[in-house]
Length: 363
Image (cartoon, rainbow, N blue to C red):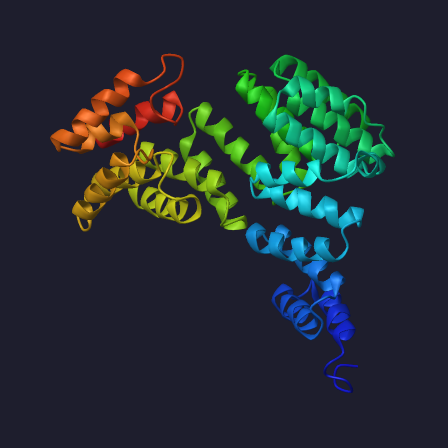
């Protein structure tokens, strides 16, 4: 059809759909070709947006989904996709604005819109408010019943209650991946390690490429004193998903604690590319370089940290700052941050285990 009529937008759109699973790059080109031929063609705008969300290119996805929404403002499925794209991008403000402009009767027609509404309420108000919405949603099938229970568990603050709800989901669907992983993660939090290991291992047997299961299983091995096994799992997680910031963070900090400095340096470099220098990332990169006796660029990092600290950015934790820098002004900032730190939380964003091991590694 394209050979006969090269300006046939629908042909490009349909070829893109057929290529989406096999050759995503070619599919993207065909969606764009269809859009170029017809700027008001909703379906390629919509499908390209959905494809880009799956590819974790949420900012680009939002631009196409917004255009599709402008053209078909009453299309509930486009609304659902756009709202989920905002949430995936962490843009709660735009998600709330979109929800505010949707008529309540339209929200009531869609299970996904009701779920997204509850999610936004949980982020902007209280968990109790979100739970009250969840309990008023009527599931339309078995899958939606499971999703409702998962949402209830995720909004429940008491970990033991959360465990009960996840177990209830698994009674209904023994191989439900999200329940297995979340149950394993919660059991890790309450130090029921053997149970956590069992559920996380089962999740990986069912879905070997599940990066969240890999990450939590890695945390389990780190907790039981097998950091090298943890490092292997963190490496596998970022190999499956190179955009996985939490995977790079765990890999870098665990490798640094085990004096595997080359692995740590690479992990923190990738983390800074993905997430930026905030959350102490630049400081850990600096410490990894110092532990490896990599002095090239050290002065540049020192200046970068000083500049960012002066404008209030959290690029290094107080311990690392006080340990690595001989600069009096930076030492003063470190001392003030120690004094100002809240007493009910650690000064460093890593676990106590990781923090202590990093001290030893550096010394």
